[in-house]
Length: 81
Figure 1: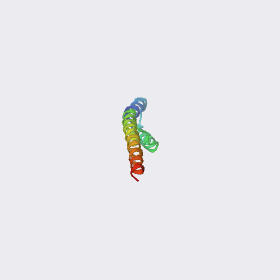
Figure 2: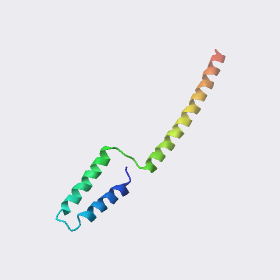
Figure 3: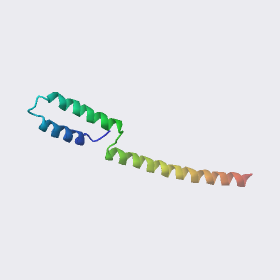
Figure 4: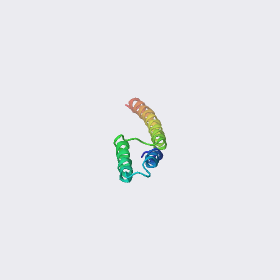
């Protein structure tokens, strides 16, 4: 869903800060909190966005072709009547 590299970088920096501290459990909680926040934002990776944009482009192209065919068939039907 979302590129976890950003989450991992944030987690790593936080881990470095509290490495020798008694707050080892905090790192796990912060990581879970960050993941939860990103999940609630419903973010997608650039790759997934690009794939969906291409799917949409193809669907629009197919729709345009079908609309053109429908217009042609409707014109033919009117001529036959």
